[in-house]
Image 1 (tube, one colour):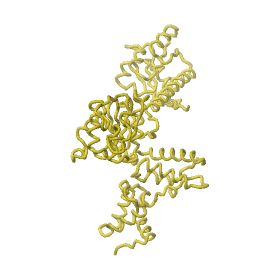
Image 2 (image 1 turned 135 degrees about the horizontal axis):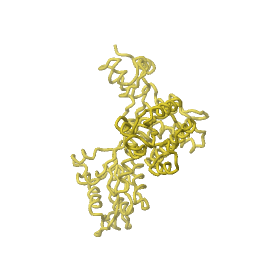
Image 3 (image 1 turned 90 degrees about the vertical axis):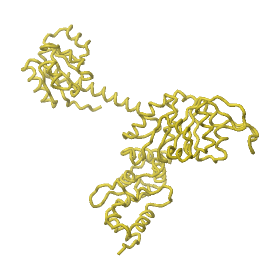
Image 4 (image 1 turned 60 degrees about the vertical axis):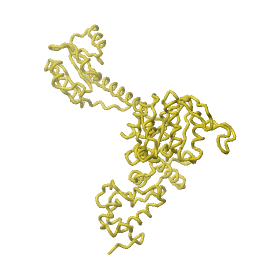
Length: 460
């Protein structure tokens, strides 16, 4: 491991000649050196935590140099003394000195001691940081942006509890991964995690699926059936798209949360269950509850701890890290040599706004790996991302942060080419060419070239 040994060092020595000689020695070895004549001067003039190392004489006017060991906190203190004895060396080390050197010291000996202390400290700090980063990470989740690190921290805090968690976020942001992480880090991880997409089950069947039913409870109920809530007993129930849950099913779910019991359809008896609920939605439940489309009491019950996942476009360098991870994964699955991303592909990936978030990115990479035959690089053409609509402005080299063209409505099956054409035709009567180009995030030159290629004449 390479360690940067150029450090900020504080010398605390009352003898000017020794202090000057030591300063010159350390400065010649590329260290940044500050001086003080006593413990009082060192603590009043400087912040000890600003230094990587403190070298102090043992005997100083006023307080002894060993007082700096406590005052400096995590900053290592190297003690030197002209009273070379085993007792003073042992006493200093017992008090926490990182090392001990006798005066008069040999120059090479001093530099070797400084190098040894700083190297050891740097490695210890790097190891601690590495351990912290590993402990902060969430299995299955990729990214180190501030936005996603905040989510990691909240997951670590809430997982050991039994608190109900509401995960909010756009489609494709990884809500199910969060539910998996919460369950894995909880005391319930030895029990089942039952995941249910409320939007994928017909409204007429959702209650029977969740809460079970007795034989003959309704047409087609030929046998008794345990519901998914009961199946999650002792574990975690993840209800994705809970905003799609019918009101009748909401009332039954509220009873599970309030009373800790579930009653199958057609049964007169309830069963006690212990279920930790994690719910997720991309909808505004507060608004739905005001409109009478979602029970307000249930909303308050599930909104104990709220985790709001950031969209992919707000995750900075995580986008490229995710893309490279997906490239490696799908190349391995398809027994292909690992492909690299061209500069154009990187530009497209990092400037496109990904309305479908991580799911859309993963699908785009999977498709690109499939289409990339006998090549060593993935280009933006394999990704089906039009650089003209996401590229940096040709005139000034700055990225248009509010590009309209890249924020295509995911509900509409339009290509970026189609969207460009439609936007121009719909707005060219009310916008100048400059305004059109700005809204689309391209230069006027690029706008003119695309008009020519698509056969869209400019309005007179």
